Amino acid sequence: MTSFLELRKRAGIEVVPLETSAVTIGKVTEADLRVSDDPALSRLHAVVERVGGGWCVRDLGSRNGTFVNGVRVWSQKALHGGDEIKVGGTRLVFRSGSLSGEQTLTAGDGAPDLTTRERDVLVALCRPLLSGDAFAEPASTQRIAAELVVSQAAVKQHLVRLYDKFGIYDEPAGASRRVRLANQAVERGAVRLADLR
Image (cartoon, rainbow, N blue to C red; front, side):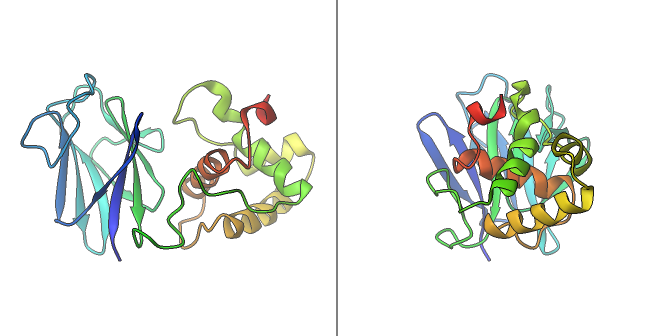
């Protein structure tokens, strides 16, 4: 199974395969992934490295931190498919799978067919993203249930079906899956900014 980073640039997405056991990220020419146009990036900011059968990201004492799904990494953090890594002002997405595989989704992929209630759950899930923080946490099941006036169990059932429809498999439960679902819902047009108001 191939793992790679998607470097999100204004001009598009650059795919960086993780072919060695460690990939350093920074501004200096010695960095494996050099991002010279980001003034907020440290000379050697972070490293993505293989640990056992998986990958983790470690901050290298950068001046403004490394974040995974909006949470600061103080030492190192295991990565799961779809995790968003922020270094300086640069956004990376960790992907695990085939570079051309069906589960590798891009912003160009259309949204799956949704029921009215699934759409309501997605809108409630994504509503906190209006805060303007690109790494805001999506709504919890408790918050979604309160907004839609349904039980948390019903919300969890809808989320399970949504994970399946959006191809989010084999991920740990909790916030990580909700982050991936919210990001994919927005990227694939299932939820639009006008829906969140």
